[in-house]
Figure 1 (tube, helix red, strand yellow):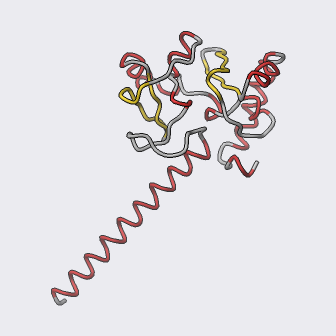
Figure 2 (tube, helix red, strand yellow):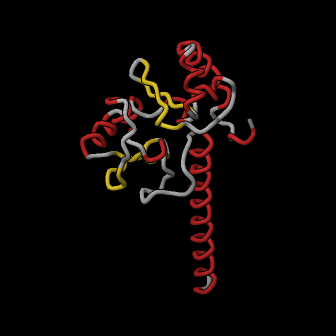
Figure 3 (cartoon, helix red, strand yellow):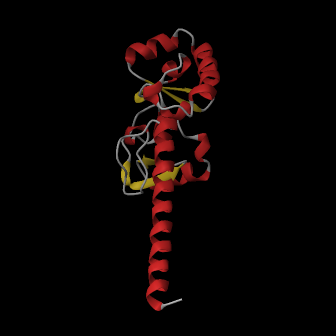
Amino acid sequence: MSNTLSKQLMNSIGFSTVALLASLSISSLANAADEHNVAPGLTAAGAPLGLHGVDPIAVIKTGNAAEGLAQFTATYNGVAYYFSNEKSMTLFQSAPNSYVPQNGGFCTFGVSVGKKFDGDPNFASIVDGKLYVFLNEEIYKLYLKDKKGTIKTAALQWKQIEHSAAHTL
């Protein structure tokens, strides 16, 4: 094989490999956006931001939606979460599944009716140590009328809609 042909082949393989890796990365980000309620764009961690940048540990531990800081970022399942301090970030990293919002961070009431509405951490409920978020105060008040029923129905619906894009529901 000539030296020129060999270089062309290597360049072609290199380009194909880069193109494949790029398409896989874009695909995984698209999946994260479909399965998790995230802000558009990417954080410095290379993943979209979840829970509106609010510290999930603070919400669960104190009931308050404390703003997280980019300097304390942890990524889980393709979603970046901000924390108000290093201690919260480390706690999250030790057991992330215990602290991520349920239903991908979408409004639990919305999920219970088969929709993926924004979940606002200012309207949150902690039940059995799990974080549930809601679209707004009006929806949160509807949820309060039947917490257990809404959560149970949402858990069943989530299995059906988890992998569906919000705009298709």
